[in-house]
Length: 226
Image (tube, rainbow, N blue to C red):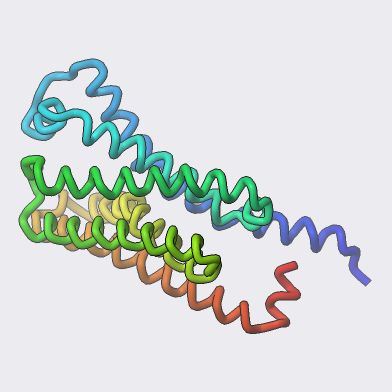
């Protein structure tokens, strides 16, 4: 009969696979955001690509800080060992939610009021408004659900919000794959890749939510998770 110790160690390792993957996925946008903060702090030369940030730096600084905390802190919320520590999950969840709201609201503000950067068209601005509004709505619905002690609904809405917030990581991978195959995408291609990143994340989130709900009604799956 196999020892239960290797089984418990294997389950512990599996519990960190998803959070580790999410952290890895958000490293590129977090690093890009940090580089942009350094650029603003060092008063780099103004170019057509960064002029809007120098003209109104507060929204982009808040967006980068909020998105970075949200993506990194949000990844930890998917770690089952940490979720079982209710005080940790509750306290960090408040910080992550506040950071997500900051990222969503500043993202919407920048889409509305910043001049469009080269390569971004009206179609992409429209998609950004839809995604930012959807992320904001999911965070609000997730907060409302936990206030009502609706744990499953809370988890579902927060998963959807996180998937949309992590779109930048998937978009970076899609753009890198495109660049590896040829020249930078034109405006239409850029819009399609950006949209595909959010859509792919949303689809994965819905799959994860359905899978979690199916396990919740399956006593065998519940036993294996313990």
